[in-house]
Length: 407
View: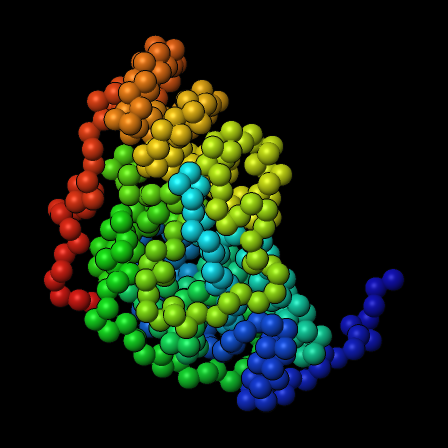
């Protein structure tokens, strides 16, 4: 039997915009969502930079960033029914032990549960409260929707976008996640005047080994270690491999050196605490992981996004960068891997160790004779006469220019 709409209970009447802001902020904080602010859905002031960034190809293989750019630039177009965006911050910083000689490094944000799940669960609970309390229509986003999250958070007054392109706050640096709830509630927006406090500091730009910042406030993702180890599915450019160090998933270098991060706040709750053998991983063990073992070990972790072959590819690069004879044995196993992608990078990594382990040469020569993939054979031949790449070689025309700074 269909219920007559006239018999349904009326939706609760929402209080005035300023009262609603106070109530929602208090409820969000009570639920552990940290700092909360509100803004309208009009396009952020610098949304017009997105088309130029995409046209330059700086998004690499992340084709989803180029889909519906008009909706990404303006939440009003993506959600014409909505009035307010609720922006929240969730701290995730924690002190982690340094990686050992044959251990791979994992970005701090990825050592616990997937933040999409942890923060998403909290946002869904808050959205349910908004629906039940005020009859609100809502939609949540955690780095998973066509929203310029950092720009909208800045518009809400939650911070400024630093030269490393991350949102920064003077009271907590940049070690936090962003999440949003788009709603049809009319909530009083916060003052969005967030001044830039980077000043003349360029530590984040200078520390980047791959020179991923063509200029301040602009990231070329194609050169970013986080992109290369997570989003890039194919062959890592040879000139960038030596500069990736021991990173196997993500990179924290630009955040590590930021002076504002001395005020970072530690993660709250158990969701972001290290799980399993993380934060650092045994590279030899990682090289031998099967697809099923990868799924069992990393399901529910951000690392799952790299997929098995991508993570093992990263591990063999890290072994090649170790300069250790102890890396030879796991790399020889990787040279027999089912994945051509893994074998290709294992050949490069073994070539890196020829000086410390000359016995690698006949191993590579034998594999070249038996290899049936042209791409891997070409890499082996290159490895047998490996030309050392320097940091200067991988920049466009030399070191990062020191010309006029973007303001």
